[in-house]
Length: 498
Image: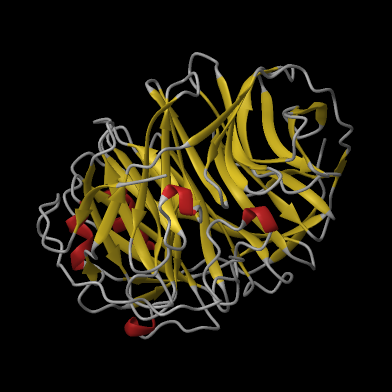
C-alpha cells in the first residue's frame, strides 16, 4: 500500500504532475471520502466507514506526508459518527461532523501522529463546516430552525454562539478571505420553496447582509467557494421557473457584495448536480458532483466554467455502480485533488451493498482521467435563467445557548487496501498499519443560451464522446452531500425527495 500511496502523493504534491491518478481505498461495507485539505506537502482526507468494527459508521481520517501514508485512523463510538469537514491546523488535523454516539454536533482534533487531542460534542445539530479563527475556530450548525455560528476555543469549547437569521436557514459552509471577510452559505426555507442562502457576517455575530437566490421550487445548495473576485454557489434546482426538467445543476456567481453576476442551469436527460466547487489558479471554476444521464446509478461528473460563466469543458467518469465526487480542491500549482466514493461494479470491486473511498488528481486537463476510468461527454443544455433574489439588511439576531462537553470516543488504527485504477494490472496492495484500538478522553423564467452536445467543441478535446439517451428514473439516488439530513454515507440506499 505504501508504494501505491507514495506514487499517488508524488503526483499530487509536485508541480510536475502531467497525468491523472485515481486510487480506490477499500474497506468492508459502505465507505466514502467527504473532505480534503492539503498544505506544505501534507494531505489529509476524511470520510466515513461502517467496516472498521468500532460502531455503526465511524469517522475515518488519513494523513499523507512526503509522499507516504503516515497513518489511517477510525474514530467514533458505538453509534453513527459522521465527518463533514477536515482541516490542517498547523501539523494537526481538526475534524467536524455529527455523532449519534455523543448525541449531537461533534468536533475533534488529532496530532501529527494520529493521537486524539480532544473530542467535544455540542447540544446542536451537525457542525457542517468550520474555519480556524484567532487561535480557535468558527463553526456553523443548527439549533432548531435557526442557523447558528459558534465561536470556539482552541480545544473546541464554546465561547459564544449566534443566530444567523430570523428565518429558517441551514448554514452548510463557512469561508473567510485572507483580508478577514467572513461568508456563510446554506439554504433558506421559505413559505413555498427552498432557496440558496448567503450572508456576510462578523465574528461577533453581526450579520451585515443576507441574500436568497432561487426559483419557484426547491433549490438546494451544497457548496460555496470565495475568491478575491467573487463567490460561487453550487447545488441543484427543481424550479421550473429556472428551466429545470428535474434535478439540474445550479451555479450562481455573485460579487463579494452578494449581488448576482451570472446564473447557469445545466440540463441533461437525467438528474445531475454539483457537490463541490473550487476556483483554479487561472480563475476558472471547477464543479464536481454526480450525473444520472447514463444510468440510474450515477457517475462522477466534472464541469469547468470560465469566470464569465461560459462552459469550458465537462465529462463523466465511472462504471456500472454509484460513483460520485464529493469534494474538489485546487492547489496553487494547478493540480486538482478530488475525493468521493466508488462502487465500480464494472471494475469488479463494488456493488449495491458496498462502496469505497476514492482519491484522485489531475493537472491542466480533465482528459487526463480518461486513462483511469471510462470517460464520456454527455449532451447538456446550458440555460441562463432569470434568478429571483431576495435581499435582507441583516443585523444582530441574538445569541443561542450551545453547550459543549468532553466526549469519550475510541481511536483505532486501520489498514485499508488500495486499488490503483490507472495501473494496467489493477493490483491491490495491503497497508501495514496496526489494528489496535485505544480509548481516549479529551484533555481540555429561462431561455436556452446554448446547447452542448457530444460533438460540440470543448476543452479537453480528447474526452470520448457519447450520445445521451433517456435516463431511467429511480427513487433511490445518491443524496448529494446529504449533510443536511445527516446520512451522507449510504449512497446505495439514500433517496432524494422530489
